[in-house]
Image (cartoon, rainbow, N blue to C red):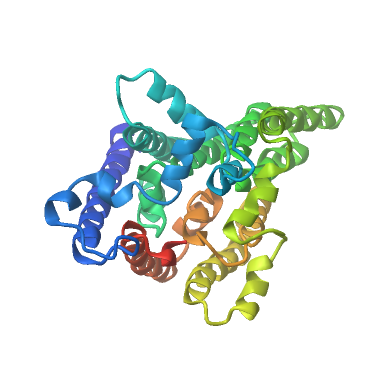
Amino acid sequence: MPGRSRTSVVLGWFLASRLVIAALGVIGVATFVDSRALTVTDNLAALNPQTAWNKWDVQSYARVAEQGYRADPGDVQGQAKAGYFPLYPAIVGALKSVTSGASFFWVGVVASNVFTLAALLLLVYGLTDTWDLASRAVALVMMSAGSFYLSIPYAEGLFLLLVVGTLVATRKGAYEVAGLLAGLAATTRAHGFALIAAPAVACWLDARVPATRRWLRVAATAALFAFPILVYFAYLSRETGSWMAFLSRQEAWQNPSPYPFRAIVGLTEHPRWIAGWIHGATWFLYAGLLIRYRRRMPLGDALFCAGALLISTQQLSFQGIYRYVVPLVPLTLALARDRDDVRRGVIAFNLVLGVLMILAFVTWNRLTV
């Protein structure tokens, strides 16, 4: 496949999807009532991207970048910062420090779009081998319900890049590099803890590696994975007094005791929570896709997807699942190879959900979370 064709696929889908998302953001803030201000934003203000997108976790990431994790015991909002992983705000904060007067929001927007574009290019050049497969895979990512998070100051774009980088390094047999990238992913989102399965299992099953060396390479991969995580834990302990603060501070989101499948239990405890059922439908859809494709992907990739889906259930409700499944690249690639009717059905589901979530996000509606 010509290099120019692959690049044009990425650029075409990237630009078209970002324009549509930006337009939906303007329509949302200019048409619907802001759930916090209880007013509709005037048309001129709606054209400012910050009016639409400088909301929810964007502001929390900004606080982490600018203040770190330290907070007074009585500062509930400050204590909640420990629930956010450090790599993305650290990178954006470092970039902000070398720019002249740029806000966290705008530096984050640029960084997130660069990370996403790099991830898509690496995806089509490193994980696909035909023009059709590349086109379908990029389309699935860009038309996913959580795609809009890839272009705003959230960690999703960086996490997607680290997932793709880990998978590419694993395919090339660079398991130690893949382990380090997976470790960095684990300091970006909790779902990154499952990513070590991809290189570790692939290394162990690699018949090209002599049996006597597999233990050593798996151990080295695991050690490099653990290194950035241990650095993060040490920093968190110094700043907050507990290396487990990222879990203990979950009480700020009414989730003081997270455990696997908590969200499924939550559906029975709160059967009238519409958001729980909408987000839960997304989880069950992608869990079903994993079952459908489990034999069509490498074992380590399947375990990564299963682990990420399991981690996604530790909250009281199925919150944010539509964005947590975006980086599950092995599922994306498997779906891209599936029948047209299956792929189109999943895309239709995502498009409807995506429009709903964009409108909810830009109007501070809790349906989005």
